[in-house]
Amino acid sequence: MHFVLLWITSTRDSLTAQLILKKMKKILSILVLNLIITSNVMAYEEANYEVVKQNKVYEIREYSDRLVIETKTSDQDSGFRKLFKYISGDNKDKKEIKMTTPVTQTEKNGNMTMQFYIPTEFSESNVPSPNNSEVKVLNIKGGYYAAIIYSGRASDSNYIKHKGILEDQLKKDKISIISKPIRATYNSPFTLPMLRRNEVMFRVNRNT
Image (cartoon, rainbow, N blue to C red; front, side, top):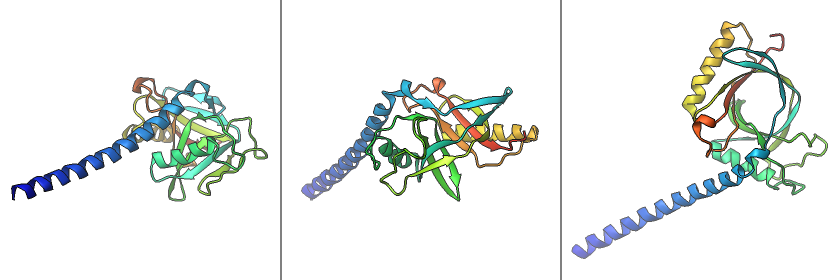
């Protein structure tokens, strides 16, 4: 009886150890991916815009047309990996493409999507086509966007808080919101919270 109990305990401990090891491998792979991205953070190209209005809460920017790669995402990690593979050479031209900022997320037709901006050296005529059918190259038409900038963790609660602040202020200022909220992040997960740049944006009526 004592031997049986020892065998059950040993088997249970072995299974627990295997589960822990599996989780550690997943965490390590994510950390390695983030370290690769972080190593070139100073070289990131940012989407160009002109600030046309600014107050204590938000600013309104005018963006020109810009190319993005986009994918539907069930969670941030899965969407990020698909887009990162594309810029790492998983495309028809096997071409590596520089990372840009911000990484954006928004809802489209009931699905959450994630976007990477394509560097300005590319156009619709020379941008590589994706190998993955779940990754699309899109041209986002220029327009006006209201943006609130905040630091701290890129958490859901922080995002929801600042989305509410921006939305309330735009309503008070009688500025028409014409899009779903856009969540924008500029830094790697290893950036200290107080040094992070996060944003929430809405496309707004260009008559504002």
